[in-house]
Image (cartoon, rainbow, N blue to C red; front, side, top):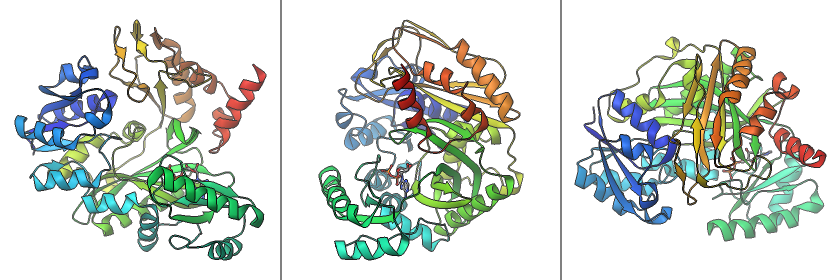
Length: 450
Ligand code: ADP
């Protein structure tokens, strides 16, 4: 087991990782920018190292400073959290060269999954169902026409180097195709410095369903069921559930087994998430995230398995703590991402939290680094905390969530709490009847009615 883990992140996830390390009796080092000197994870860590000024590129993305902090403090492993350097293959390689363990997969596995075309090819080879489309980048318009007429319109053009929902264009008919291709190419070139695009069938009303997996790097892997993250705004997840209201136990174990077998065959090490669009009973792979996800706590709530413990165990060579047949899915969990943003316009609202009171009681978990008097810096994302609620079934979970939202107080800045108070009372949400476009439509309707 590791002696000392350096946490290369900030906010709620730095605290989350710190808690797991402490429980395993491992000492912790955190790195932070000058803007985060007062952060909760800095106060709670055994050691902290200031690595630079507020902009991420000078601090949380500064590989040299982070490696230097490892050397100075004698950390033998690094947990990257999510975002920042968590899916940076070069970072994983550099740590390996310094004999420091990266708590995550190999640089090569990060590289494969970071390239969307390569990821899709690999998924297909491993038996994971993918969206019908081109086999690799499309070189010219003629090839694009041929593929689009084979799979049928509408189609979506996507950037090979894509991310964050950028560089994607939908073509509803053959007439739309040349413009969609040209815009997708130029957006991809501008955003990622690579104008390679590929084409796939556009699904009209899918749900976003993702499968949590953990591999031991030596040919064994488990799945921990799925999460439904269909409630999104601008491709950003807002509300996540486990299990998905749309799947039954048989579908769950079918897709879960496909994913864990694929991951085992790949020899993958660590936690990861295989993301699908799900429509008419079919799963279509879209991408794999080779890190811990923001929404991982809903999986922890229904399985009782601490995913960060699992990541640390696997990275240290200790193997998986459990076998697939021992994993049970108990009850239902929902996570709400509480952002310091206006709940209607979604403009960020940095500033000082004058009063912070979190809900409690059975089945409630709040992951947050915020406290009364905490100043939210304007330099980073606006997530101030996650409310995770667990119940024996979805109805109990929703009732408990409504009560927890009533108790939650954040004064001094605007937050997205009012949005969740609205959603928890909505009939479609109560019925679990929503797809990836539902939230955008709902927000447009609410804005029009106001
Ligand atoms: P990124 O890495 O840029 O986030 P993804 O491939 O994960 O791109 O897709 C982001 C989102 O775009 C999906 O969650 C979904 O909302 C939409 N999307 C992607 N591919 C398709 C498709 N084939 N049909 C319909 N919507 C899609």
